Length: 126
Picture 1 (cartoon, helix red, strand yellow):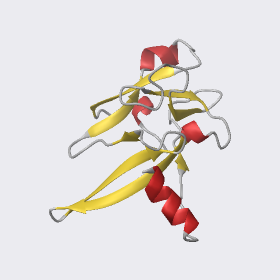
Picture 2: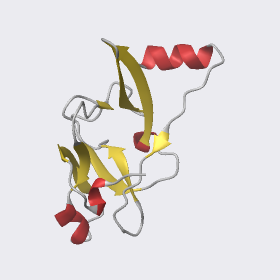
Picture 3: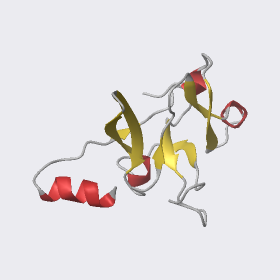
Picture 4: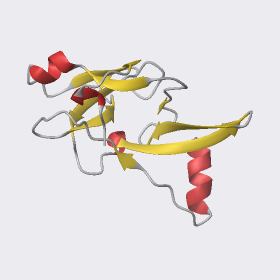
């Protein structure tokens, strides 16, 4: 991934990344963040969390990467800080779910997991 991004930028192209904010009404706003303070940071199993948004923090910037296979289009999100760290929900009805008990308890960071989609605010990101 880093090579792909590097080639695009070196060739005069650009890479657009996005900050994904939780729709859960928290103050400050919470963003989808690659965990940076664990031994597994940036590796498989390194984890993601909902943590207070920090303007332009590389661990909170997600870059959509699209590809096609067997006539279908797919998109995954690569993290700007850890470009080998990506999220892919696959086909189906899945959501990134910020742990509502942590959010309701006022904790500054909430774990995030992939679950079957329901219609609750802590599963919506914008």
